[in-house]
Image (cartoon, rainbow, N blue to C red; front, side):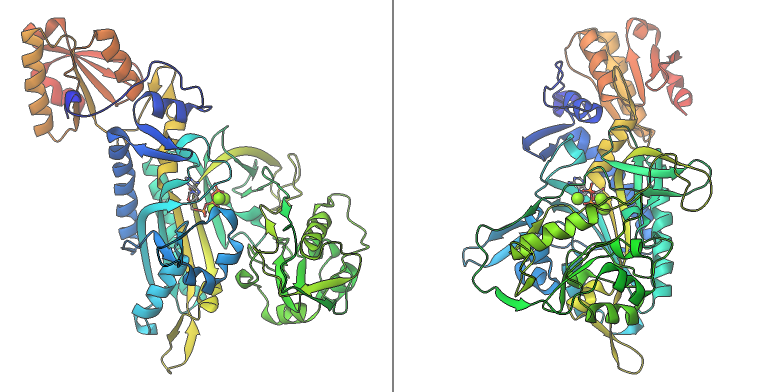
Length: 562
Ligand code: ATP
Ligand code: MG
Ligand code: MG
Ligand code: MG
């Protein structure tokens, strides 16, 4: 590509609102342009970079046996009402109306759509398991969009979903996806770690995140200094904002709280320790769990609860115990003797929520017809990980250290959460219907681009890994007005392309200093400069990463580049 034929609007000044390296450099090197808060244009260089990342993802997804499809970004509210997430997703869901006043959402993720598709398309066990994926633009009205592509409100995600008849089959696909993710992030050249997501609080093996190690990461990883144990502690963003509506909606009805149980009673009933119960508090309203705090102990695991502000998204390891638990109500949560290392956030969180739902809790009432998301909002709930730096590692090996990470991927065993909520079922060999067992697997594609930029740069600009770089070679005639230089550069431009190199040709009439600065800023792996020795057929090759310079005869260039 000739630079005169594309746009690469490099900036000399440091953009004032960009705090971190990748954001600054992607703006300065002319890769991206902001159009609104958290909304960016991928200019031609970024588009090519994104294409390379997507190519790697596609190759690894196909290799793992996933088939690509493309679902709509525009999704009818009914699907989200079926799953319950219309009421629980909160303000991150971009909601809108069509001209007939029908409600829609712009997809932040696609569990609902894919579940409805597979429910129609794959009615029988014979066609299971199946894994489908897409690479698509997602919308999330993030509270704090920031750091450029790292946290956008519109961003590119690869999302895959798998459907199974057994948990063994799900395990198998989950493992394949895990390996695919390792391959993808390795091929992107990233320094990353797979960690237990959600603090390992739900057993850990059911969900893992892929974290690019970086100071500016928003997640904190607790890892052992002498084993492979690593978990996201999700402590950084503890943010207890329980928003109460101005006036309770009219259809709320006061009911007497069913018999209350203290933590001690529940702990005896479930035969788990009191601290485990504290980590797993369920708020019941009208016998329905409207709120679940995930406090599963990754070792004890008697009560295993998935990420669930939405009652429908609750999944317990032990169904019998779950039933028993749900038949008992424990509106009262104290008094309890808290172990020393347990902070009181759990209690506060519940209190906040009870208050948010009921006004003051003192009268001992709960309310009927409470709608989470309408009657109260929980922005983020505290995920209690009591672990501190220097503590013994939960796997018993070594001590805990902390590191910061950028979440670029997330894999998740969903189980039957969505299929049950949406009555999505397949028929087994006896014609009996069962909910699909599901998994989901996401990669932030545009975030990955930014994470690569964050890891690969120096004071002069970006340094793209060879298989991600928008072009392989930056070809720069120092002076386009010099005939020898111009001709040799043109000749090299054709011959390099014939040898399958992607070449960016700086054919602009700019001063050499400008061209070289731009070139370092853009960060292609190799720069070929056609300068003073053009008449002798000699060019200069510079390796961006090492700064190494070599003179080469133009006709031997392909050999040198090998
Ligand atoms: P985060 O914790 O950073 O908000 P998430 O856990 O909400 O991310 P997931 O629902 O797991 O995100 O989505 C799958 C992947 O999509 C994430 O692992 C991340 O790489 C990417 N992603 C999520 N939100 C954004 C965003 N606002 N901008 C860019 N990428 C994002
Ligand atoms: Mg998020
Ligand atoms: Mg996350
Ligand atoms: Mg995630």
